[in-house]
Length: 323
Image (cartoon, rainbow, N blue to C red):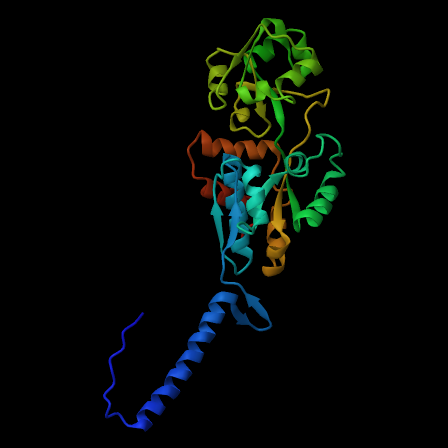
């Protein structure tokens, strides 16, 4: 509490009255400024919020890049500013509850993650064509949230083989792999090997019986492949290393893997609060293929570039950002 200098008891009543009027006037002015700071500055008939739009991302290079893209298009095409919270542990499991609490306004999410992990449906119980509409309908009803646009790429499981091995056995599809798997070593991260829809499902679907199976840390799989310690591994279709020349991705010709198309989940309250937000996000609609996303991941993970610069350069090359 501020300390005020005691006024002389000899002050005239008129001076006190004048001071009261001045304080009242100043108080009204301060109240008006406080109100503007809290609710935004009036501009015509619109209210432009002074708060930052909150973006969340999962702990993945790909998500860091997407988060920067979202921030860039929002700040480039609106008067709002955005703030990114990067790498939230637990991914969907922790971001979704935080979204429901209003701690974040939006985040990049994958269709099958929302369908299975959030809505608790069985994987593959909706077609790719049905998925966007069904996700939107249920997210709106249960969480007052929307799925806005699709970036264009699909980050699903993939089977990767050393190019030397693929060339030797003329491997194009995962069915081709079944004919020679007894001569090869598979190396995968423990989570994939143990999960029900992972390694076991892959082997059962394609009849794979490898000479040896090794548990390999997720960050060391491609290095182990390069060193010749393993011949085959599980990956994701947008892994940075899959853009290398010494790795071949086999076609999932029996369509085992469900698709994980990437979109943006947004709280409807944020869409109402920030007019133009949805249009800004839709500037990223269809902007990335699997190969392009893998290439951007490679620039960050292998070449050591900053994700914000990689995102900015890519969007500029696509003509998305204002000149």
